[in-house]
Image (cartoon, rainbow, N blue to C red; front, side, top):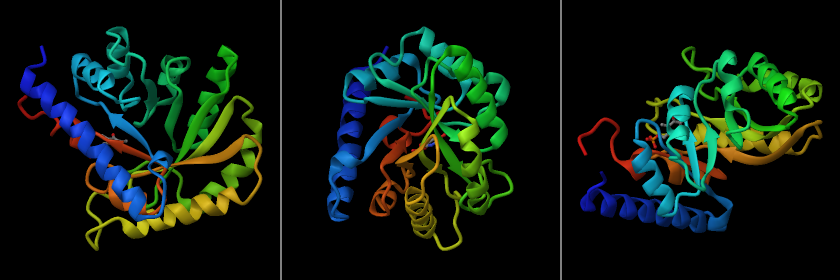
Length: 239
Ligand SMILES: *Cc1c(COP(=O)(O)O)cnc(C)c1O
């Protein structure tokens, strides 16, 4: 059960995040409508997620397949758009096709191929974003920026994929204290790719920015922010 206090906090948080995102857009000379808010729903119950959806969240991003399937069964996502934002193993792709409108985290040719194959079986074209390892971190998945170009040339082979843009999760503790230069690099890469013509690629979406840095990301051209903590509170905290 969601208590009255929790409900009020969730409503307030959603309103506050929207307001901050809109202000950041305006400060950057952009329209607030250019930025889509994706609620990162991991570790939140189906009930809390549904409450958020009923209170204005139009897009949910889940990052574990098992958790997504459980909440999907519980109708947690209501009318919201459901996207996948986490690390994805090729053998789990089949559970997502037909359920998610966007897979944000395609960070290898192998995963792209697996999604292409499954989408083909379902007779659909699956929208995806290419994940870029902009901080060149050993521990992270995603394309290293200079490797992206070679892959883009090959996307024509994946007729059941529709690349809609790029996604990045910059280093959690950047050396100079913020992620601005990573966001700028992402924006530059996004623009550079947009000016070229590749089959199955339509650079519409630049997904970057989370609770701690979504305003900076919007200032640098993000069109999609993925926010968890600022909406739902600290994960695992007593509620
Ligand atoms: C959890 C998560 C987020 C949101 O993180 P917060 O810092 O809680 O806003 C964004 N993107 C991905 C891929 C995530 O897993």
